[in-house]
Image (tube, rainbow, N blue to C red; front, top):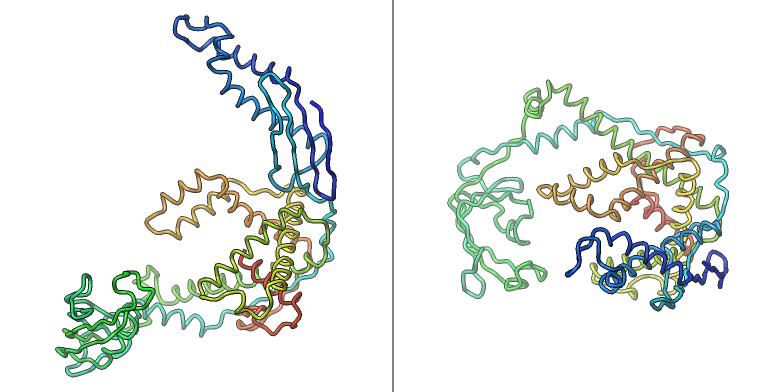
Length: 462
């Protein structure tokens, strides 16, 4: 094998690799010999077909396999010999090959930058801690009581208010014609729930049992049924009953309905739940502060293609969000070139932090186990009730999707490793401060601060 480095510019490397024809031929003869003992061709007994005929029959397919194997093996060997670790999948292009001739191809890579991770013992962080107050637990209890509420018939002549349920018969018309799906009998509708077309529930406010009303509404432009979108409609509604909500009493009976021994046990469970939520907020704030310090602490060359791909993903997300809001770049406060510069800075920061955390993990043998991946998959399946089996199989059959789950797990484990080395001081804070988004606070007006603010939000989301 002949290897010639044709480019070496920063992290970019390009090689011209030539594999001699006799090496390809030797592999082909070896594969033909392997299959000769098992293949049966017309007119020949098993294992007796001549190699020349086997080559004519299977040579093209085998040669394709050999070329793929040879390129992979020689590319890997080249990178090992040059002590290069590719940051992304190498680009390979076969430039010359004829049956019986040499194999020539180019190998382009962007290498991982070399840098020292150093010691993290001089990092100082703050862990915010908020006390779980009794009134927060009481609010959770009241919310549970609302969820467990029952309904009784309203007093004779009492009108319906928000939160009450009306039992209605209705028939809808568009352009004077009854339309499919626009009628029902004995339908239970909670006023204020927002289940019906905007304006429908509001026009039933104060309605009494046995009262009839004509409700005039307009279907939204984005309504799912194209024939009805944007159309005015009239509904003839008859109220068959009005029912008033009665929240469940906050006592031992409520706890028993939820599988708890008594009210005190339920309060304890809710308090622990709130405490876990506070802990998640605290960790997110602490992790954000760590990433900010690391971003300021390290400065090394980045693989250009990796940065470009990250930037393109961020820019595509921005354009998608603008499209959902029916806006364009012209509606934003900055010209496009400044926005691109800001978001490219975000991309560079993300790539730098990703490479740093990955290198810390590699050097300290921090790995993600298959058990951790499986737990992440199970958590993801719970997000799709009724489709758990399909979601599980999707991840099992797609290694790339599993890799996307692995990355944030590794990031968290590396951050935990750094937390153990750093000095972490606890500070008790009000809940409002713990849950406050720093990005919502007034920031400096220059673009670099705004870009950092956007990046922090992205890091927390990740």
